[in-house]
Image 1 (cartoon, rainbow, N blue to C red):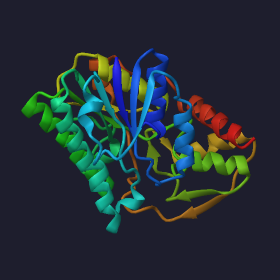
Image 2 (image 1 turned 30 degrees about the horizontal axis):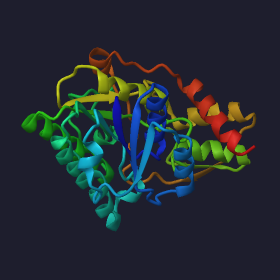
Image 3 (image 1 turned 180 degrees about the vertical axis):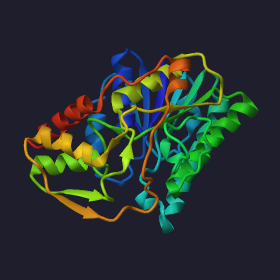
Length: 314
């Protein structure tokens, strides 16, 4: 298989690319190296992918000529996008529209012209649900995002469904629930918490800490992507990819205290605008259609994440 991975220098994109290469596939990785966080971390991710089966295209998906890149690709894994709930308000919303909506539409148009393409896998987000009416949330529950970021992820997901229904494009959208693990972005909670623990600093906690998240280990997310690319599912399918943890942030901090060997002080901050109190996904449909289920518990996953962070601070 030859795959294009957008956002190949990022957290999920680089982990997915590494697994594809380990499985003997070819990868064309596209990344613009935007400075949302330290570009040196992205460069480090890409260096680990170097080899004859990996080709890096450092370019903007809004302007790069996509047709030659897709000419002999079997699968597109669209992991690129502008992340972050907190920064999606105000004037920065234009960036989210371009990176999450316009880029996806441009990729879908190019995918229509790709002669060998058999699957387009889109990385959606549990943010599309907002404050869901019931938990665990199923794909039948009405999306109602509470942040501009969530709005753009839902819009791009709808585009995938439209291209599937109108043109038969074989899209699958995966709604990720709070992905964590080695290589996680430095602005995300687990890496911030674990880095603070490694450096002996207080943890910066937004909200009461009682907010509940369905955390999903990155290896499980990669497995879902690979199955979405290979299993015979209807075009336009939308699936939850949820770890089934339903753990509060305070419970996470207790696990980190045990991993680090000492209790950590908390610096408390108000809840961020657009930050939902709870997420929790029902992944029954992914189990039915893909044969996927999470395999890494929150304790196991955090231990692996801690090992990665601690090694970097040794």
